[in-house]
Amino acid sequence: MTFDPRDTSNRENLSVREVAERFIRLFYIEDNPRDAFLCWVHPDYIQHNPNAPTGRDATLAMMEASIARNPGLTHEVKRVVYGDGDLVAVHFHFCREPDHPGYAIIDILRIERGYIREHWDVMQEVPDPATCRNDNGMF
Image (cartoon, rainbow, N blue to C red; front, top):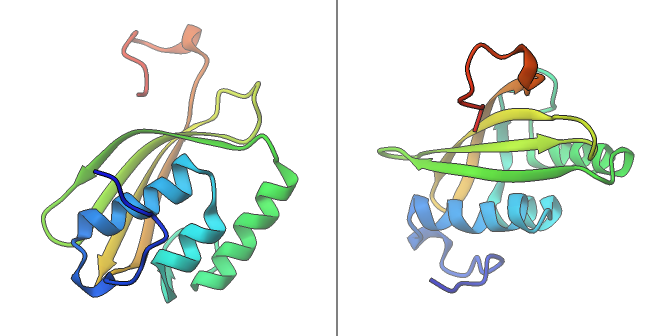
């Protein structure tokens, strides 16, 4: 399916999946948090990560400062799980710098009437493979 991930013109009629696909394209794939947040995150966005501010603009400012300090930062989406109702989970590999093993992260997004309204996340550092008790990997 081809779509413009910045097209918010019919926002209230988009499905949860359609909103998530547009946000994921901009934020994780294009590495463009500014457009992703301004297009798809509600101004009264609720942030549940205790290390991040709540509100769209405050969260975006924090992320942009982090990106400025870590220009090699990457997000590699491994899978997206569309639940029943208004929740979407994005499992991805996050690295702040190229030579660091990074983190396995799951973002949980609650989508309401064409906006991402709420966010939770869980994060686990990717260990050295030599210390793992199995060969399954984190992704």
